[in-house]
Length: 251
Picture 1 (cartoon, rainbow, N blue to C red):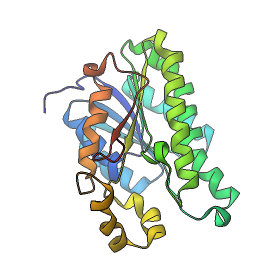
Picture 2 (cartoon, rainbow, N blue to C red):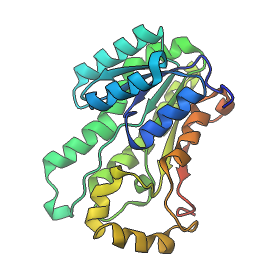
Picture 3 (cartoon, rainbow, N blue to C red):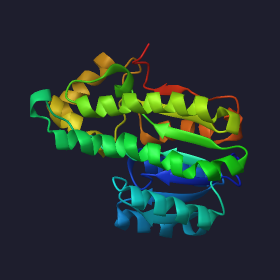
Picture 4 (tube, rainbow, N blue to C red):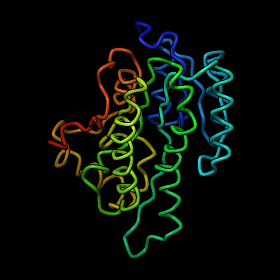
């Protein structure tokens, strides 16, 4: 690796598994120092041990505003500031419209949208001091196209796209760039709810060549490099974008 993030102080949410772990691995390989915020204490301790002094794990329930604020404070103190917010944490729940509860709808929006808003609001003073700050949010192709059985998830990811463009416009004068990544079909356990909804793994795999022009699902490590680019100074003139990583589905 080339040290593209050397000296960057990153707060990464959801960095202990799936795409988040792939992002963490590539951020560390490129020279960043990372505070990982996640609810999974066991996996969090494992990543902190694995990466030594380059990573600090901070446990937080992102449905709780007070815990988000405390996590930001701990991260900023440990890293002596924050240059990049990488807001990857999310949840996915599936179900038909008439079977989907209001409680589950609120749970999805609390983690996928509300937490991101709080993270940016409460970190903005640190980001302003950075001088070259970047915010990278995790959206989804589902936020652009929608998907049967993913009403709450698709709606929440569409909201993330709206949040991204609005924050980018508002924070541009502060030198803070804001972008989103929109993965398509990525082969990770995170997508199990939609796999179950469409009839299982075999059914999903039968759809892959029909739906994805490249004819396969992506691996998590194929999504992470875009986060590196958007966190780095290489993307200094890129803001307000929601960029697909989808094998050609959205065309």
